[in-house]
Amino acid sequence: MTYTVQPGDTLASIAYLHGTTVERLVELNNIPDPDYLPVGRRIEIPAGDNLFRQQVDTGVTIRTPSASRIVSGLRYTISTDRVRYQRGDRVRITFTKCNVSGRVIRLRYNTGQRFDFVALRGGREVWRWSDDQFFTQAAGTEVLRPGECRTYRATWDLRNRQGNFVALDTYTIRAFNVARTLSGQFVQTNIQVVRAGGQPVPPQQPCPRTNMLLDPGIERWLDRNTPVIWSGNNVVRTTSAHSGNYAAELGRDPDRQAVLSQSVNAEPNRIYQITFWAMENVRPGRTANFVLEAEIFIYDSAGRLIGRVDPAYNPGSLPNNTYQQFTFTSGVLPARTDRAELRFVFRPRTGNDNTVVIDDVTMTCVR
Image (cartoon, rainbow, N blue to C red):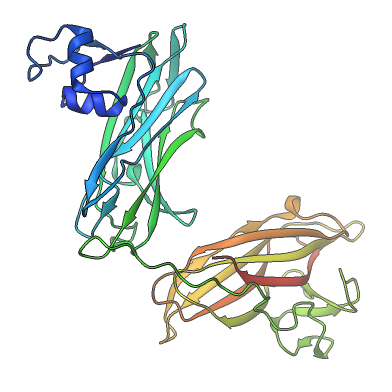
């Protein structure tokens, strides 16, 4: 296959990107001066080269973070300049897409954006390159002939979307080609953010997998409208339970907001999973027009709100008069986490007559 030289390329960077050596490229392409590489020149890449890439970092030989995969005739390759970084460093990211098929590939784009990079911690996005970019709103097309490549580069300053340095941990870096039919496909690699001196963060102890919530079946009630363990507003006890004797019905008055919540101790840098059973209580001739939010509010030891997770479910998401299980995760909780509050919020809209029933809720630590 071939590679077209881009501004800023060197033979060393091209060799690194394709898992080969400068010597192999010089020999195959008859390059008289390895230090002179005109932009636009097409370089042949040795077939079958996939050398083990290494670098020395804090005295230890480790793999350079890079990865490749084939997507619809394109080879995606992502690489970073190092494995380990300290706060204040910049992560230099390179993404290349190469046409490895035997046909011309036309890529169509909705705007002037051609690629994107994201960084994730524990599966939760903390940074996205395109958040700080501006793109023309005109659609466009790229044509890649067989063997032709495009290379894109960006840097990440190890700060999150709020402008704060990220925690010491392992991060996944993903590269996307945002063409219309390929925007959900990506290639990824991992890096570490470490303490000064290059030592990685020691792993956390395994977290307990028991349910953190009390009265998960919502069985204990002072009276028909007042749960004992859970806090409730505009809720009513119902015998239409998933298990046990009772469940909580949100929307006793269906045109007012209802809340069911419980607060628990939580630890920083943990991921929690929430599972619950829910159904829409559909009544003949009534109208369903509401949103159900399952929210986690995260507080520090001073009681300040420092984070929030809030997936939402509309009537089409909830089955009618039969229970369905729902699951979501919190993402990695912030460093100052002391407490987490789980809230189910029923938000009626104009003309709503229906309610939502919640039962058998679990909140467990998964990492």
